Length: 118
Image 1: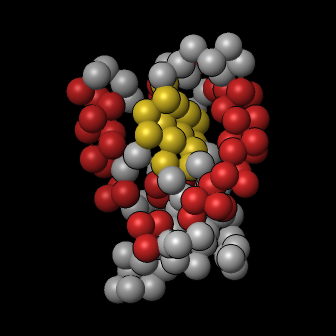
Image 2: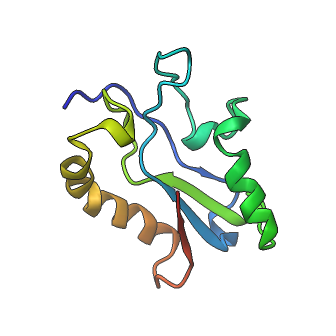
């Protein structure tokens, strides 16, 4: 599995998080079949609202906004295949579970926040 680059989580204030939004990985080929590189998870703050606007609409429906959430991916690095077509995704994700848990525990030590997966 070739790892191509990394992106970072999104959060306004880790002390005020009400929910965690967890994606799969950043791999996407939505730029005319080419991979679009983003700097933040789901392109939040990168000017690519299309990746997060549906999720944000759902969050707003339950009274949450950008200032209320911590957003990250199960796998933070870009992979060489789009998520749904990546035969190596599950082994790669399993390998990342300890790092993902550690990252989320830094936000929610008591594991009481809801985790919304996308």
